[in-house]
Length: 202
Ligand SMILES: [Zn+2]
Image 1 (cartoon, rainbow, N blue to C red):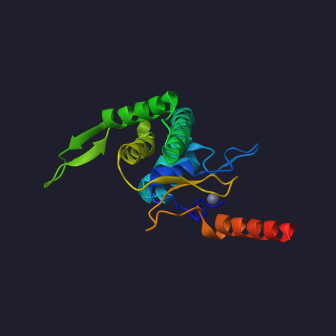
Image 2 (cartoon, protein in one colour):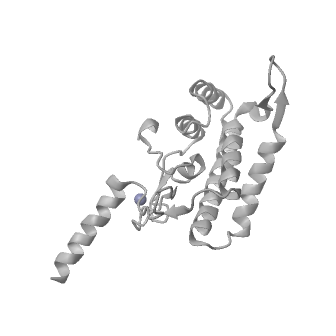
Image 3 (spheres, rainbow, N blue to C red):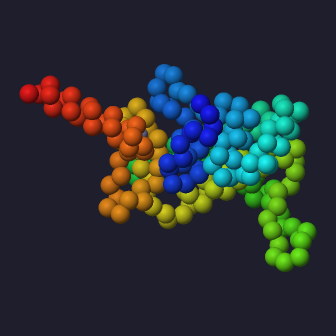
């Protein structure tokens, strides 16, 4: 699938990142970001990095495939840890210690690689150190977004009610009763199922 067609429906980029897998719990999950190049393009799609930076990073990754693949491994570990934590929060359970540790390490690395730059007149700006050829910047940006999400007191996290889908999202609906990640995919699937069930019971 084209990166631009991947839906961003979660209301938070860190949860949209969790949703870069379809049917995670099935025998054949599909990841939309199976390598560093796709990962960095997705980060641009989600507004976490500039398009121009993503294109540049994809070129750097092609020159440094081993470093890129190491960063991608850490990004996938962060994604799965965040998935675990998000589901625990949605269920009102305590998150698994391993998931919290993975997230915490990613956030610590992000903070350790940020500094204040005074390279222009006016306010200082946050900048990133350029270890690993700059390839980890999208990962660090995601880690900070993820920590804001899980440590904040924003709207509740929900898991899509359409069984096999299991995407996650923030429920910002006024009555707090949003059930589906994507109405046109999962809401309709559930309606069709209910319709069939009603017919069978007649
Ligand atoms: Zn869904």
